[in-house]
Amino acid sequence: MTSPGSSMENKAALREKLKKIRDQVDPALAETASQGVWTLLSRLPEFQKARGIGAFASTPSEINTYPLLEGTLGLGKKLYLPKVSPDKTHFEYYQVGDFKNLSVGPFGILEPPGSHPAPWEEIDLALVPGLAFDSQGHRLGFGKGYYDRVLPLLKKTALTVGLGYSFQIVEQVPSEPHDILLKAILSEKGFHLCK
Image (cartoon, rainbow, N blue to C red; front, side):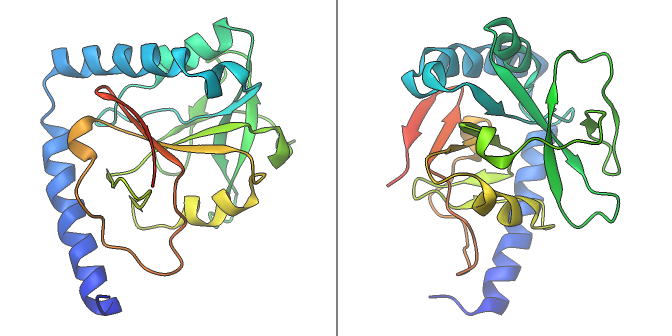
């Protein structure tokens, strides 16, 4: 067990390293990867069974989620995206019917409109962004703790899936006791359930 100080330092170093790699992804690889994750996700029995999908609108350096968002709506599933609260302490999911009404939120991420968040129990499968993931389900986020606060609010049966490029899956993410584990990881190279 590492001491909290060294865990924080390790997280900071890993964050910087992965941000650099992620910012240099070749556009052709990015395009192939975004189509690849949608193909993999759409074939998953867990996804096919799920009615409510919590996802996220990707930023330019993240794996492009738009093929997946459009595909989810195209299959007639309910799609929910995060919207950060006015006090910036947490986010809630809002249902999205199309992408024309999304607007830029406080962190430069596109968010849905609306004043009525979705009930947490409507989310059957949640796709979770991150900078790094490991096979145990640890996730290195962006340091604000939003998903650590939100994931425990989902129903116990919801499948939480870390979504990123295959190079974001590392041997071990530095972890702390309060970190919330993911149940699965999805990249363009495949899907696997965490140990």
